[in-house]
Image (cartoon, rainbow, N blue to C red):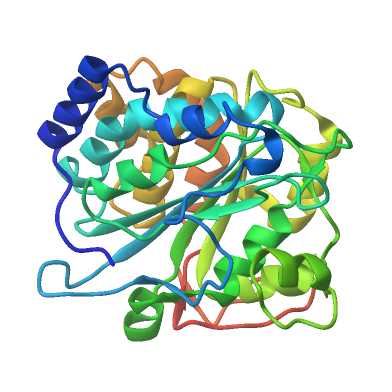
Length: 330
């Protein structure tokens, strides 16, 4: 996947068509959730059952693909996140492409629920370079469930992304992609073999500690967790502390939910060394975004890290796990 190019005109035409026909941006979810809960299921394009691989590949059109995965919690108060992402897609691409942060982004959208109780605990789109990513986003089922115990199945999403994605950026150039988890709760402490079998159909016989699957994942991606304001556990020291133990400074506390897309774009720009934070904030002002102050507060720590040199073969986890993918971004 990953052919074609993003067009704001196509995005606007699709939005106008939905408005004319009375369909919402998340029409699949709107229609599916009118039925009984036991009939809810993932859209076929996003269903992970039997998943082989989601690919981010180079092509003549995109010779240096950069995979960017955005997976968000759709339980409880987090249901507003995909709606914000959908309305802000033009701003995201305006920054990535027109401001030169990266030439060939390929974006995958996915959703996370709770495998202990939800009908649809995991949904994964394809890596796309064109407006099909808007289709994937719009096909996500906004289940709104969750177990109510301040944990969701982020670790199951990590497993899927670690073992079911293939990236030319890594395989050909030794450059990791970016994975953003957006949520307000903690992961479970291990990937449960039973849930992997039920949700993905993989023949896994033993549970996997979250630190082990994270080590696998970080061979492919720089992993970030974004905790936005306006969610049930925004500001929770328990949630933030858990993620900081796992990801260190790659935990982003965001005080404005509407700034999610801008935060993702500037994080990529910083990671690709295309901008420093001040330049990125100037870019936000240039496109008329009101999110500069929030993004600046959220990314201050990352901006300091981006001034450090890349170190070949640097460790990917502080807990003794070692892996190298050529040159590692710090």
